Length: 304
Ligand SMILES: [Zn+2]
Ligand SMILES: [Zn+2]
Figure 1 (cartoon, rainbow, N blue to C red):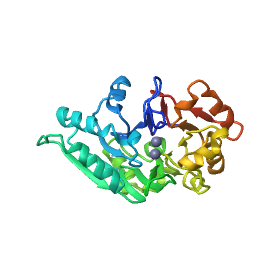
Figure 2: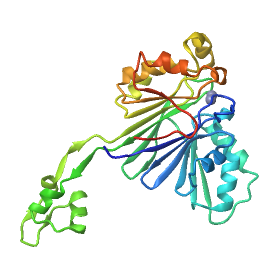
Figure 3: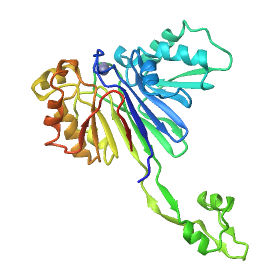
């Protein structure tokens, strides 16, 4: 299977940074686009340490206004304004997030060639890019509006190169026309329809990111069939009451979502610093419920 998403965890700690884990940020690369999901304090330096350039970073989706998810925006946007690795950046978040980012960036002198767009969002479609669609879905947290994100690639049909060759389709731009759905005539006069040279429809890849949220069963509907689920798992089961009160999940609950959604793999994220000496317990609790569970660490890079 080919790689669709390249995901780098830049901050996997809840609320406060620790020596090993920075606060929330995840970078995803898809074709010629990169985007950040959340941007906690120190995210730009985490990107440098992960050897990730700012080139192609033109989208930033923010889950909610808690500072461990947005405080890195001022510094990151100041740097991007100065270095101009891209011409424009679009920041998406609920109206409170957008207002906080606007305040942070109000100190930055604007350079002419660089455009910053602050885009308030509701649940639903956030942006599209080539075959990709990004949707926001509501989570259950201690703020008015908090969102998780679904990154869904549209279904695609593979080009059957050998069939095309056998039908006499030249090896050139004609093939791109067929891929785009246009019929064409071969040099020998044979009319070739796209259906003859395209394979069966295959589902696109799906990546689901559950940001800060208490558990609720509908999360598994949102995550249904995902190739990869990244979920907050702030607490251990012993602290389940605390988790519910604080609007967070336990590792067990994240695993229940993964199991009920039938995802292919689960990464536990947004880990409380209180477990710094016993983090493996999160996996021990989750894996009996969903076997293919991993614990995200800062600078882990995965391909989906
Ligand atoms: Zn948080
Ligand atoms: Zn929060």
